Structure formats: C-alpha cells, structure tokens
Image (tube, rainbow, N blue to C red; front, side, top):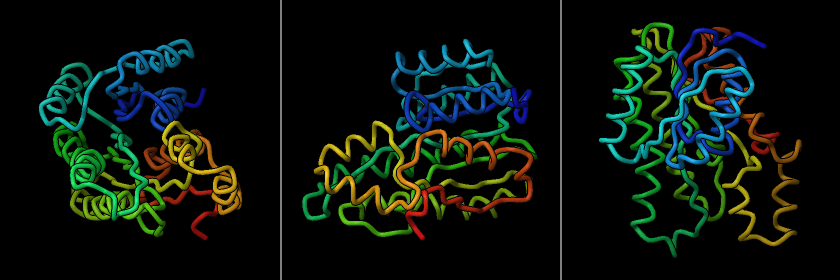
Length: 249
C-alpha cells in the first residue's frame, strides 16, 4: 500500500458516489484518514465500508453542505475528532445542462449555492484546521473555460471555482497552504449518465469522439487529486490541472 498520506486527515465532500467516492478510496489506499462527507447516508456508509474492508480508515459524516449550520457542525466534529485537516477536497457539486432561454432563476441560485457558495463556505470554516503544509483541491471542470451549448450556467459556476482557486492560492500562500483545482472532461459517473439520458446514441458517440482518449473514469480524476494534495506537489499552487482525455486540446 502506498503511504503518501500516512497519518494525514483528509476531508472529501460529495464522497458518496462517482468522482468523490473514487477520491476517498484512493486517498485511503494511500494511508490517509479519510472523512467522507455527503448527504446520502446509505451510500456514504457503503463507501466507508469499502475503505475499512481494504484496511483503510474512513469516517462517514452525513452533511448537506449547502446549509451553513450543517457545515459548522461538520467542522466542529472534525476539530473534535481529528484536530486538523491536511487536505480538503471540495468535490461536491451539481450539473445543469439546459439552454439559458428555458432556465429558471431558482435553478441558477441552487447551482451557484452548491458549486460556488458552499465550496467557499466550507473552505472558510475549515481555515482554522488547515495548518502550514496543508492543501485544498477544488473540483472545477473544462466547462469553466471551454464553452458548450446548454452549459452556460454550469460553466459559469465552474469558472467561478477556478477564479476562487487562483485568488485563494495567493491569499493563503503566506500561511503555506496550497490551493489547486482539477478540471475534468466528461467522466462516466451517475451525473454523466443523467446527461447522456437526454441525448441520443449518435450525440453521445460524438461527445466521446471529442475526447481523443475517450471518456474518463472516476479514478483518473482521483489520481490527479491525490497528486495535487500530496507533498510531491509542494511547490504547486493556483494551478488548474486539466484531466480531460484531450477534449480541450
């Protein structure tokens, strides 16, 4: 077993499925004490069980990070049980694939509330637990800098995450806290499958063909997060690592 994260406490949001679950499993495999955070308690416990069955350490915390009070309770629990956070992975988010002309303001507010506001708020509340040498990895998307039909608002939310990442990198550098982001292309997850359900087979094939290396899998992204959060990336901050199989080339 790799031990890049031996003795380190890692918080991963949106950890009950897809990319978040893969990140939790990978960091636990590398020796991290992983705090898995998500709304779905049943799915979260299944991921935690996979970690422990593999010899790793996982704590499942059911939390809706779109609620400020829930974040406060989460951070208090992490402080009481673990003392500090060595890596915060802000992975929780939602998609919105919809033309602007039929998008309602409430859908936009909910999207920004989770993808941007909650990411900033959990980071803010965790600042007291992040010490020199700690790291933050945010989940962006190639949609944050590459346009796409029906992706204007989702892209805007991820563009905000990229801007947040770069600014926080400068803001927290004096404290020796690194802040980076990963920007995936299309990865086969439940979120992607919901998008595919709105398309026909030819459209899905065209999307995959636009990725020279094909669609990714959750572990492709997890490996990139593991690198950016590790000591091997100790001189990297304010960077957005594109992991998209060549889609944005």
